[in-house]
Structures are given as C-alpha cells and as structure tokens.
Amino acid sequence: MSAGCLLDTSFLITLAKRDRPQHAVARNYFRYCLDAGIPLYLSPLAVMEF
Amino acid sequence: MRSTRTLRFKLFDQIGEAEVSPSAVSLPLLKQYAEEVGSFLSGSRKVINLANFPVAVKQGSFEFEVSGLPDDIDLWTDLRALRQQDSLQAVDRGRAAVMEKWQEAARKRSTRGYAIEPDQGGARIRVTAETAYRHGVDSPWYLAERYLRGSLYESGGKKSPNIHLQLETGQSLPIAATREQLRDDKENRLYQEVLVRVSVEQHRDSGELRNARLIRFEDYRPAFDPERFAAYVEEGSHAWRDIDDPVAWVRNQRGG
Image (tube, rainbow over all chains, first blue to last red; front, top):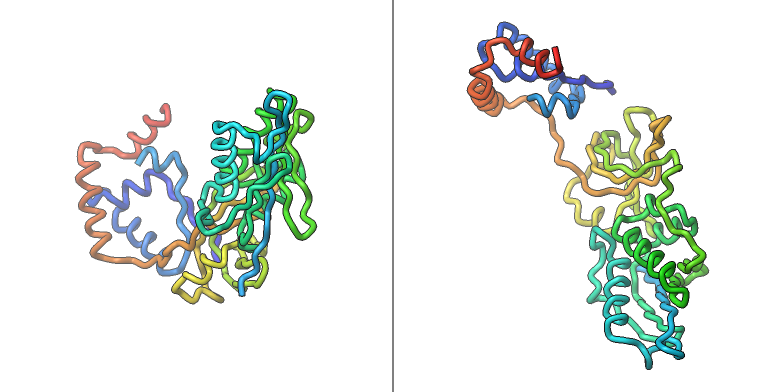
C-alpha cells in the first residue's frame, strides 16, 4: 500500500491550466497516481490558494 | 431478536419545602428536563427515534425510566466514558452539552442534582454541586473527525457491531458502528479497500487512533475519467486565465 502524495498549489494550477508548459506532465502524474491507487492529499493551504 | 436495555434518569430538587416528585413538579422544570433527557438519549446524531420508546414517570425524586433502548448504540459507550468526570470530550457532543447544562445547574442550586442509572450493573452517573464534569483539556487524546482509508477485514457483531480496518499506518482499528449502518449498506466491502468518515480520538503526539465510531462509508473509486478531466481543465484554464506566472503568484500569496 502506498503512502500517498501531497499536492501543492503549483501542481494544481499546472494540472488545471492548459497553457502551462508542464500541463501534460502534471496530467500524466495525476493519471498514474489514480491508476496505481496512490492516495492524493491536499493541505488546507493549497485548497485555500487554489 | 434485538436486545434492549433500560435507563433511568433522575432529577433531585426541591419546590419550597417539598421534594420534587411526579406529584409535585413545576411545568417549566418538567418541560426542560424532558427535553434534556431526550437530547441525551438521541445524541447529536439522532441515533434513535424517541417516539419508539416507552417512558415511565416514577418517584425518585423525579424519575424517567426509559425502556426498550437498543443495546448496540453509542449511548452505552458514552455512559461508560462518563464514569470519568473529565470525559466530555470523549462523548457525543449533544450528550456532552446536556451534561454541561446539568453540571452548571447543580452548581448554581445546591438542592439540584441529576443521576443516570443504566441497568445490567452499569455504573451510576451523578451530577451534583460536588462533581466537576468537564472537557479533559489536559488529555493527550483529542476528538477529531477523520477520513480513514484501509482494508476492511471484519464487519458485524451481535452486541457491539463494528468494522475492523487495517490502516495504511499498519494500525488495526476497530470502528464502532450501528447495526443499521451495517445492515443498510448495500455494498459488500469485506476484504476491500475502503474510505470511511469516522469520529475518533487521536493522540496529539503519536497520532495513534482509538475509540473510533463510523459516521459513514464514502463512495471512493478513484479512476481517471477523460471527460471529467477535460471539463476540469476547461474550467481551470478559464479561472486562471489572468495569471501569467502561477509560481510567482503562489510565492506572492505566501509573502514572497
């Protein structure tokens, strides 16, 4: 069982914003985590900023 | 057949020279006490329907005897916790609020007292001017609500229904549940990875969990959905369209 990933605000913005240079990379990481059953966590700070 | 239990709530006070009793009680006091007993029984999660349980009014000084109570609800766990006076943080918040009211009333009025007497040899809970029911602020255990993810390897139980979860931390945690929660759940979750919402005591230093109670099973099936992701990107790109450099923006939000 995996420990999980803590997602920061920059990752969330890059994942959501199509014209960010690393958007495709963020998407691949996101998809990989879901497919592999790796839990994704958000801090209250990241939620507030995003 | 479901086991049931009886609970006695007792109120002690005086009206003038006379002791409060079923034949001598003021309407405001009767109304207030009945509401408080109802709140205590049902708790903040309204686990039982008060209309379903017969109540006998008895001498003693003034007593409500409530019978037919299911023996698998968190009421009994809370009553066990209330053997300690610094335990209000560990019981249902609705019941804790009633206990605080009773403690305050008993302090203000020396003739006022309360008692709760479970059947089957359960310890009698007394609230008087001499008791000090309170939240145990010095306790290293604090009450929290948490999402927990783990493998469910046991579910059910005759007298104390619960589920057992093997957590990602390695801790094996029993989680008290009601018979209804387990009976009404339509999914077979046994030996599956599950996500549950619980109220639980957590140790402030070690992070260890104890006395968990199930709030609900969460619908948790993480999977990548291209259509939903595309909609998310569409919305996100629009929302962040005015921010050219998100990294600088985040740094600025955090004070440079």
